[in-house]
Amino acid sequence: MDKKEIQEQRMKMYFINATKELLKGEGLKSISVRNIAERAGYSFGTLYNYFDDVKELIFICVEDFQTECREFIEERTKTQAQGKDKLRAIVKYYMFYFVQYPGIFELFFLERANDVGNKKSTFEMIYSFLDKLSRDEWKYLVEQSALSKQQARLKAEITKNMVVGMLIFYLNRHNPQSFDEFLQKTEILLDEILNF
Amino acid sequence: MDKKEIQEQRMKMYFINATKELLKGEGLKSISVRNIAERAGYSFGTLYNYFDDVKELIFICVEDFQTECREFIEERTKTQAQGKDKLRAIVKYYMFYFVQYPGIFELFFLERANDVGNKKSTFEMIYSFLDKLSRDEWKYLVEQSALSKQQARLKAEITKNMVVGMLIFYLNRHNPQSFDEFLQKTEILLDEILNF
DNA sequence: TTGCATAATTGAACAATGTTCATTATTTTT
DNA sequence: AAAAATAATGAACATTGTTCAATTATGCAA
Image (cartoon, rainbow over all chains, first blue to last red; front, side, top):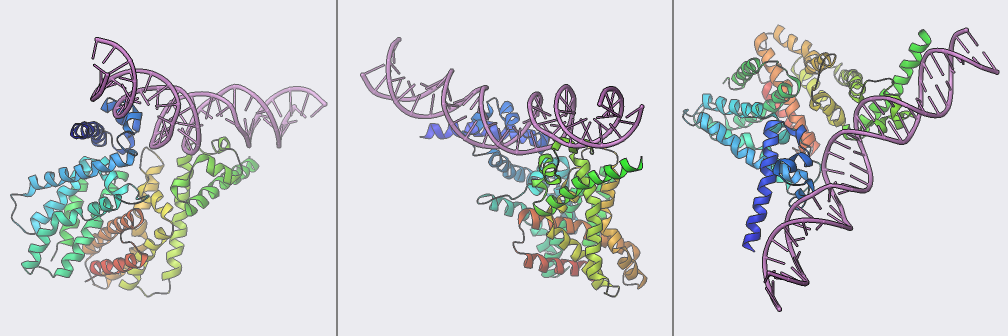
């Protein structure tokens, strides 16, 4: 039935939006079934009529946040001309997005891949997310003969992994202590990687 | 009293060793107060006569594991002559140690810095751990005029952060899937960073 | 409108978590 | 041996995710 479909989707949305609000606000630690359900205006039991478990709900949020993150970056970099500067900016705003929403960072990178199935593709999406965001710029630099295709691949890989490490230390360990220092460090290390 | 001191230390050791065994074996997820206490041969309540909370117990393990990790690396690299190869080897075995004990990786890098005080220094120790392990090699390379002091600092920083990112993706997300691929990727990326 | 059948919502109940604390057991001192 | 001090214990509490029988709401046919 069509009506059923619409109603079910609407119900799901209530829970999804509640979860997204909590993740943005308080982060992963504030997520509980009872919390989500209360914010959605239903009992915690009702949640299980629409989702198998709380993980399913949380991983639905990942895709929404990815879209949001992409838009966040594009808004801030679309006017820039192709090249190193734009590449740097993309990576920078990619990091800033997660600094703004540490809960989403946890969700994207720290949540364990316990089990199976459909989540595999979600993880793959997260892993290649920065690659997709910066692909055009690396490609452009290769076409400009600024560096070889192989070197671009390696530097992109180094960047991708380094960025996660930096975010861990900053968000989980307050190292560096201030955002200013973090910003400065980001710039300096990206400069070193793009120093060709 | 001296006797009291010895007895208390001994009691602490029972719990610490039980915790270390669990971390090495099953990882952080298998850690529970009742689990630790059972393995130590006492009630879970007894644990609280010797530790403020389970976090204190866990963070004591960090220092022990750091010593173990340092020895693990030194055993495998002490015969090598100073230079790039040894530096690569140190970083590699640093990573291998955590691949061997993913629970210790979680403990070192993923456990949140919730609160205060004495843990600050523990986190600082963890953060600078790879720096300390590889300091002599970077210094040697600078002395050999292979690269500038500033560049060495930056490359060390890039490496430190990248390594954590790579371990996250490998241990938490099974990316790459096999240890062989992970090993290969490690070598290639370290080569690129040390390509001077 | 009424009555029945189907569907959706609910929260009590369960297991597992960390932590507290009054009670019990042990050891030390007198 | 009795008293005092110390240590060990597990019942109890507040959380957590999840299940499911019972309740409430809804849709539909008569």
